[in-house]
Length: 446
Ligand code: DGY
Image 1 (spheres, protein in one colour):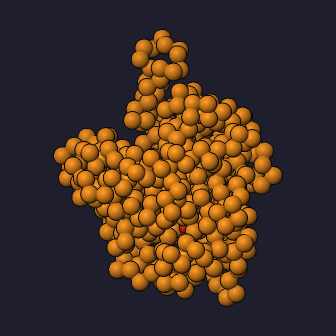
Image 2: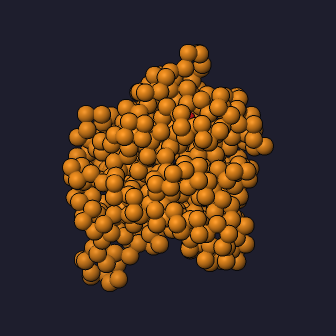
Image 3: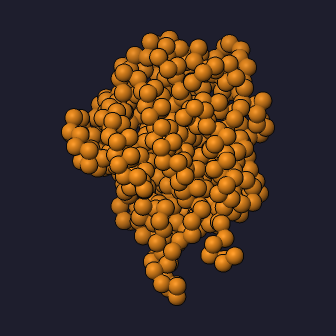
């Protein structure tokens, strides 16, 4: 076989994972540990489906948006079917929606991934017919974020739960979460039946996660009361950046599909964020820091969230240059990168959920951000490391960046999806003899 034809990852195995995790049109992140539809998992997974079944990819999005709340919110979990195997299930959330769901959202990446799917579609007619009806729903979703989570129009949305960040157990949340009371009722965690406890959050954190879930329910999901009184209220730089990037993508989708209702709100919000993001920049840390708005303090832990503004075109040239340098030495600090928490941090833990392991979908976004800001070499390094994780450890939920070992759930949908759309193809060079890395052409980066 010609070396150029050698598969860079096991494509058949990755497809088989998506097929095995398919549940009548939506994909569970992994069997057992996460038995329902999670919003940002689903958005990433749809891109993977698109590489071999375009109809199925659009279906993933349609099922997710069928669970959108009347106020525009897209819940972070849709509980399709019997929820007894998962905790906390719909009874604990108490949202009482038609499709049972959680009562918080997750990083707003849908407009970004759906726009990519449109650009990559081989069946353009199918893509337009399936995406068209979703565009007004995306507008409602983004308006919900800006209206409900930035009621004062600061340009920086807030989050009420670490789960909303998708980076649940990040050490950046330790201080604001410590201010949240613990629940005084007992419960049985189901996650520990699937994954070693040294790879999952500790009980005091779980007690606080549940206090917050209960808090929204006790206050009847009243936005104003939650904004004023929720004991956890954080400007999460990743949520801000990913929403901003998605809004830029959504504005383009609105133009293409002729949707004007609500567009002005999104455009105004994007301008506010562009003005406000600089207030999160830390000269000392060379990255953007999340903020606890209950105490007005910066959350000074270097995690992958702090550099995601690179993916959202939110950094000045000088800020981007400093973040490139940071990424370079961060990559050098572990066997493979990019660790979700900088290994030099005293809070770094190589195996524990969001406290150090590598997540491939985040590294993909950072690779796109590095390439877009003039560093295709960093982008390629991130991709080579991601390939190494999959090829040496398998399609795990996350990876120990020191031991290059798989952690969390196995046969994980978003890892398989990222492998299919990002890792399966090599970069092409404009000419075989070129050694200029800035001229690498990466089909998956469009
Ligand atoms: C979990 O159950 O750990 C999830 O991350 C919550 O979204």
